[in-house]
Amino acid sequence: MLTRVLRPIILLLAGCLPGMAAGIRLSPSATVSVLTCAPGNDAYSLFGHTALQVEDQATGLNRVYNFGTFDSRQAGFPVYFVRGSLQYWLSAASFNLFLYTYQLENRSIYQQTLALTPTEVQTLYDKLEALLQSPARYYRYRFFTDNCSTRPLLLLNQSLAASIRLDSGRYTSPQTHRQLIAPYTAPHPWIATGINLALGRLISRYPTGKRFFCPTR
Image (cartoon, rainbow, N blue to C red; front, side, top):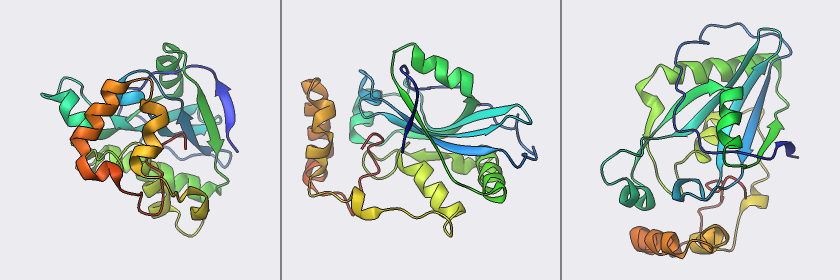
């Protein structure tokens, strides 16, 4: 179940600190949490956000890994965003900085601490730090299939396949992509129109098995 942390938020657009925490040996009490962030009012934040937090009070580490980093100065940003073809990347920042950026827009963050062993926590942490140093941290954003919500899940599955068990039935949906995002776009008809035009037939299709592309659903 999700634990409420605070009632505030704004999408972290920067804060990439590669290498600063690499090589740390975590203590047995270190934890990994999924941070689910409430929707905002900007086009890029309408659907919420997902990030991973690694916290170790024994070493003072409290770091957030964010697959939703992008540069809004990219040429044609609005069009490419709704079309789902922007370059995104993994960045890292302190939890305090991450929290502060969301407080600025009074959006909520929910924390779900995963029941992992110390070995699993270390494995996931090492993979995140290695990814920060790799060209693989960059990816082509895809509106429904490859985004800040699907990337953490993919990493968890790849790193902890033997430990992670997902109730996939809970996430299957008889609704189309358009129906799933309608509650978020309803207050912003111009964004809804742009997404419909940009994504074409894809918007009317059904999710392929799961709807993890939407962080808060």
